[in-house]
Amino acid sequence: MDPFRASVGLFSTPMLAGTAVLSLLLAGCAAPGRPMTQTVRIETPGCDAARCELSNDVGHWTLPSTPGTVSLTTSHAPLQVTCQAAPGASGRTGAPATVAPPGAAGAVAGGVAGGAAIGAAVGATALSFIPPLGVIVVLSGVAVGAATGHSVAADLQSIRYPEVIRVGLDCRPPGPAVAPPGPRVGLDVRSLTPDEARAAGLGDRRGVRVLAVVADGHAAAADLQTGDILLSADGVDLADAADLAERVLVLPPGSALVLKVWRHGQALERRLTKPGGMP
Image (cartoon, rainbow, N blue to C red; front, side, top):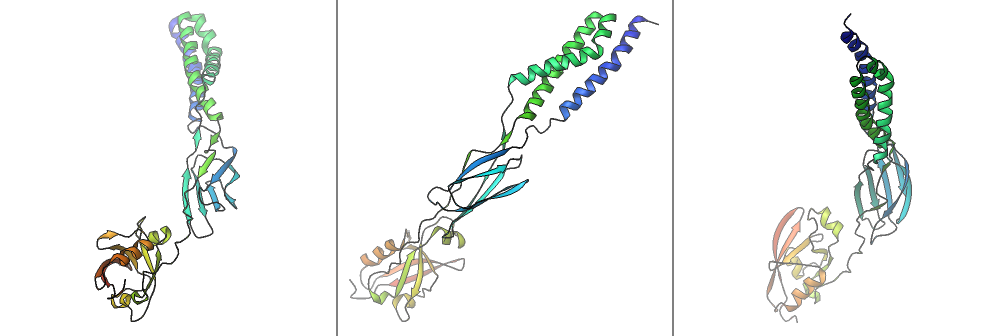
């Protein structure tokens, strides 16, 4: 038999076997990182004492009051955090999972292991028949082993969430009720809260909520209704209830203030007339 062919036959089977083993090692490290028990701190700036619910695809945890810490099990899935404060303010955020990249030590260790594995399998045979081929095989084992070692090192790293997670809440108390000057206007209002604005489909827009309309008053004559949201006066956005009171105060008696009103998802226009003789 041709010695060269014999050497190739002896070489190919062990090398293929070694390569197959390393390929399986690489395939097993497709999703690096392992879960861990981690303690995270939850904060709700400007809105303490909020109750928070935390969850991912492996569990659910509760924090009775913020700020505070929770021990949980990490996962490749993001951590979902939902917080609710006593006044009704709520907020939600997601925290991504991360895995720290492995150092060079994993690749070096893997290179040595890979070179030794393939060298032990085929090196002696290859060196006996074709010395240069044995060297190439061992070097190939080092290269493939380095990649394997890098993947194995990554797999041993822990999955982590951020140490501190902040959830935005707005716990500002509603502004006090403010009535425009003069009882004959017949209108009680207060500043619109952020929650009310979002619930009405207005986003973060400011405005004034109508609390009560006195029958037979000028506000009733202008077809203003309880629950209306006043957005602007004479084309200028209203910041709050005090802003409306000031607009009425500087309005000459007998003059009308053109109000943009939000009612049941529709924008309307109403004219509020200041009573004659009213300062």
